[in-house]
Image 1: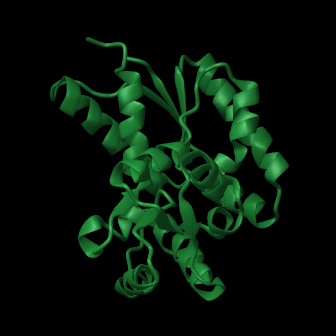
Image 2: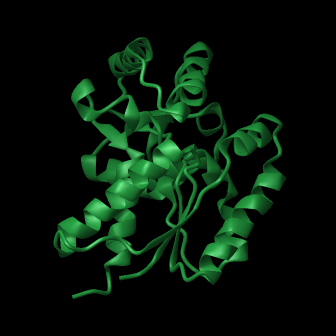
Length: 233
């Protein structure tokens, strides 16, 4: 079994989900006495979010690259960035390491392709929704048409992530707002919704929606397990 190196969270809420899914995935494959070999370097979300708000992406590039370097030196054989937004730093991470990085947008693209969907709604932080690093991979590598909510709805989605989900707060009103945004987009021809923030699955699940839900946290963890176990008989 290869050892997986986890960066993040980026909040500890999603760290919990990743750790759970990785261990469940290994146990389901190898038997319930087995668990995942992994290393986790947690980060201070307050520090990360402040740098994001200030647009200090070069500083964040350096921070993420240093974490990945430390994980490799500690024995990690695969890097997993446990957040959609922080995949903005993947080039810096790759430049500082020699082990593979499993990109969450590529895993997402493969899942959407399996489902046969061509037009999807992307929910996430304002950085993930408004910048092109995520959408370009889905469009250029998988031919997927990615739409995002209106400016007002993007603000709602972002604020719920940072002020509620990052703290483990699950509010009925926020869930209702998210579902209304999804329903509105589905009426406009969207075939699936990407939960493009690793905390959103705390709020929205497949049972809440009529269209397919792409849970990036779960499928990212599942893909990591597949990689970690790929050389085992």
